[in-house]
Image (cartoon, rainbow, N blue to C red; front, side, top):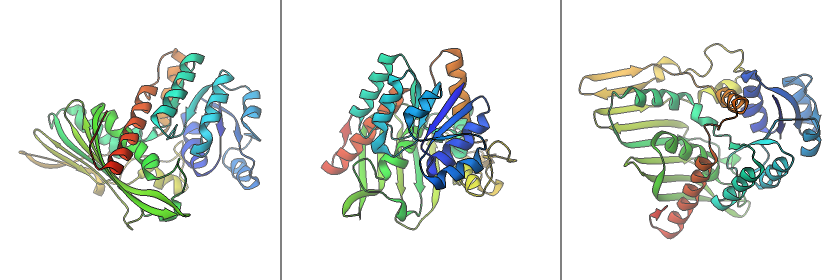
Length: 339
């Protein structure tokens, strides 16, 4: 199948192109970027793949799927334009600024009879895949509580504007991870940390309390401004606990110049950072699973080839937006918000 990439900033270059290449089933037929510097980077990273000026030029080359990686405020129009041309769409997160915006795009995709999905690639994070294996084993029994913490020391990357903020960015991923593992959410508590960026208030940190329909309570927390870089996944369950402090393995490998299609031990955490299960029988380390964002593109290709739905559904993506909307309301009004 033929795929095109719209946007070649940090996300397009580091979080999409290498994994499209590693998935191997796709033919990349073009990348939308007008920047001379980015065109030079494309020529280095993907020799022979042409750069084009805009979405229409890319669609004219004949594509089955387009991947929209441009800034959030531009995505609505690009998604609608691609759907109008009869092309399936992968939208970066957040694929809309609010749940109502997400429902609009979902309705457009249903009307067109096309697949629209969201790049929730962090379902394939190394630490999350390892945790999923622990839960699937049943060793710990039913989960009572979960904590997902993702602190990064990146204050200079905060952007101002109604479509930005850490909650919409990293929060989209963390919320999707928790609902992927524990199901839908019925009530949301939240506290947001705000800072001033270019004269505007921007959320630079958050703590969310998610009450899942099946009884699990998960806490999702992250920050960009406290000079701390650390990840944590903690599970409290009927027969014990699991604690992981793995790193952002794949991102570190990409930034070190490695490629998911060629690197040895791609997406595998070093043994000294493996997670630990604690039960009445004692404590033991759990070997790292393999994290690989290319699985998103492999599974997408398989779903389209078979004419079936994709695992990252629009219903799930809209539910993530509903939770983010509720979190902003909970913080602003100082109350729990039911869904």
